[in-house]
Image (cartoon, rainbow, N blue to C red; front, side, top):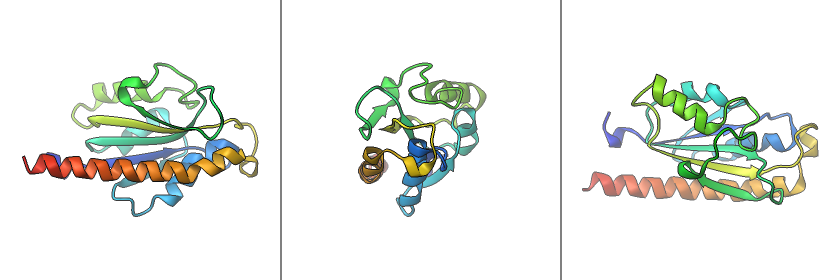
Length: 163
């Protein structure tokens, strides 16, 4: 598969019924037509692997708990993802561990570049109508950031094709 045949995939993670955990679902609903393959996964961890089909870039969207103000939008590149952190995933394996397993099981299909767009959440034990106001307000910001990331990836891809 040539580089021009591979592109980006955005995987939005979250339980659409649970307060701040629903951010992945909400971002997913706002990103249609974004110029990348878009997937929704209600849980993360190992369930992400079948959604990866050899794209060069992966953007994962999820609610996180890194101890800052709710509604903060984090953009975390692969190199900065923590190991074994429940702050990044309450779905068993963390993102880093999942990709490392995928690299072993499916060599050549894991993305070259991975970015987590995480929205800092606070309420994970109530239903969706109790989504934190700051988290709700951050969804559009996260969508804008993801759209900019996709545009930047498209620019880099076209520059590489012209080399």
